[in-house]
Every structure is written in C-alpha cells, then in structure tokens.
Image 1 (spheres, rainbow, N blue to C red):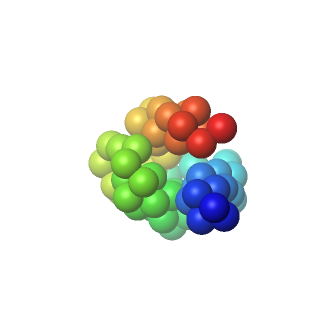
Image 2 (image 1 turned 90 degrees about the vertical axis):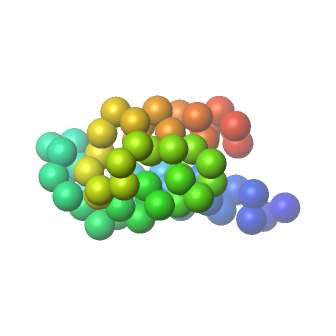
Length: 68
C-alpha cells in the first residue's frame, strides 16, 4: 500500500523544510501542517500551533517507529 508511507514521508519532509526557524521555536506553516498530519495519523504533537516543540519530535519518532 503506497498510502501507508505517504503520511510519514510528508511529515518528515515538512519538518525538514525550514529547520532554522523551527528550531528557534518560531511559527512555521510547514510545522503547523506536520502537526495536523501527525495528529490525524494518531501521533499527538501536543498543541497544534505551528511551533516545533518537544512533543512534535516525540510524535515524529513514534511515527517513524510505527512505520519503519
């Protein structure tokens, strides 16, 4: 199933889109989009606010573990 890998790949691509702004804790539309996708996939990123926080990284690691 190709759709099985679409959400994890898209989340990772969005998180890598602008690491400097995201790492600084500033609002980033790509992070907001990734948060929405992570939440929809069942991996809670915490508050969906467009800021890269610890819960986002935990959700991504959970997603990677679940989907290899």
